[in-house]
Length: 146
Ligand code: DHK
Image 1 (cartoon, rainbow, N blue to C red):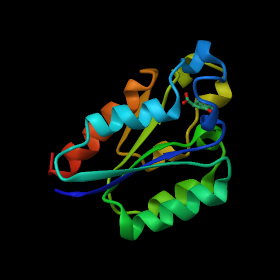
Image 2 (image 1 turned 180 degrees about the vertical axis):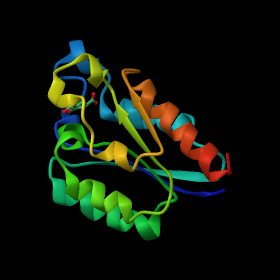
Image 3 (image 1 turned 180 degrees about the horizontal axis):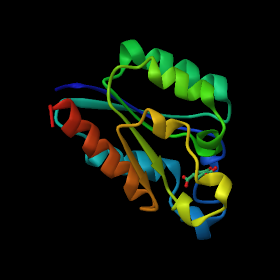
């Protein structure tokens, strides 16, 4: 089923490739976008978005209600704090896949809880930026009915 997939990225992910590369790797968000586009399901389009501001992410999730078929989201640290992002995602009807580049469960205990997981149809952690590709593929599968 055709449609636009929003790939939303939260705070500090604009620094991907330069920020703590031992945790987040050397690839940039532009590399993530290229790799996601390479696995884009037939008939789908992609919008890659990043903000350091919670409200901007919420506004894009609201926009997704009309403009997106599915959402891939790495909310960054808002994963662990934002009931507002959870509420916005709960107002979106399509598939949602949550991505974390690092294995959050192997890290500090404050990273072990995710509000977004209460809504996500799937959660990927610790696959590096490959997690985004897997998420885009999975959205395609869910949109196709599986
Ligand atoms: C990215 C962040 O910025 C952290 O705040 C999260 C996540 C983990 C990631 O692994 O992609 O705790």
